[in-house]
Image (cartoon, rainbow, N blue to C red; front, side, top):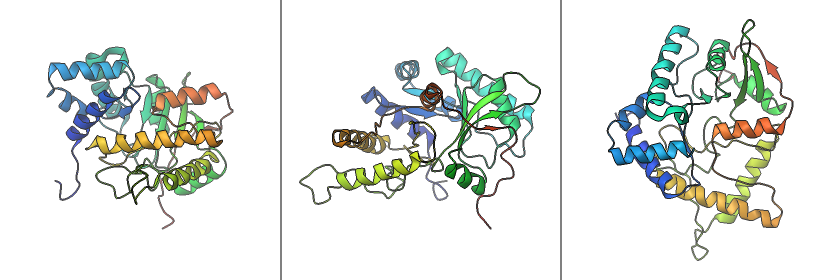
Length: 295
């Protein structure tokens, strides 16, 4: 129903796989198994083999991996377990150990339950990311360097700790850097003969955003989401502009910038944060109730 929302997951997967194959530096994460299975079974054996290669090399990484990104507020744990079983079984049967998700990616459910986090911990996930929590809680956490924590997900189960990270800018790209057919932001124009050349301004603003973001987190690592709802149906737009954003951001290191940008995944980020060895706050209750605005 394109009159309601322009959306086509099959085109996202078609386009993203094509762009990943162009450049081994590029990365992409994929979440819900339901749409992926539907797409994968329609592909030729040759393309399926290329997808296997991308998964084995870590260039296409599954996170979440359940049939869907389930609700956490009005749901029974039996249903959560069942739909994770369904999705993870497909990934295991198709890709083996390389297809096993290690990260919970509950970026869009409205509030988060301790039981959901407990299930992730029991299933052996290494971390959990989400975007939606009470706006007052989020504001406070960003001001006090506590958006990341160790969540104690159960009072009676061992091995129940789960690294949890609150995303900075919802699950979207920074303002002005949405490089997608559904967006209205200007592309990266690096032709210095063009009257629309904008690299200096784009990089200046980007670095300012990152420096502000860094004030909220405890390590030197920042996870920057570059996408939004149904983005990447024409992935060449996204990757072409992100290639330039990374290139010209890192070029500033010659002028003293300490920022190093690169394509990554949530599991790589969790590893880097863990290696930093910083003390993190803890939590042992729900992220409920959920309030998005003061009204």
